[in-house]
Length: 116
Image: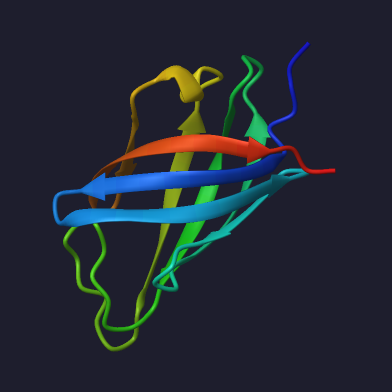
């Protein structure tokens, strides 16, 4: 039986220009999150049939910020989409790598608790 991916998660990110963190909630196929600097994450996911999940996330970064990939968001902010694939064993891996349109990031994802 595959466990539900629904829950609260923390993530630590690193890219060529720095490090960051974010919190996420996954619930019934909806992913939402935010980081301390105001970057918002909105997306969807489905189980991958192997205990993990896959989906897409829209990243909305606020104006005049610098992202871990080394990109400055400019006066209007920046929005981009990222495909995600999270394997069932994500918590036992030292890190995962995510390809974004702005460059790769490494991240550690930790499940904090279930929803409900």
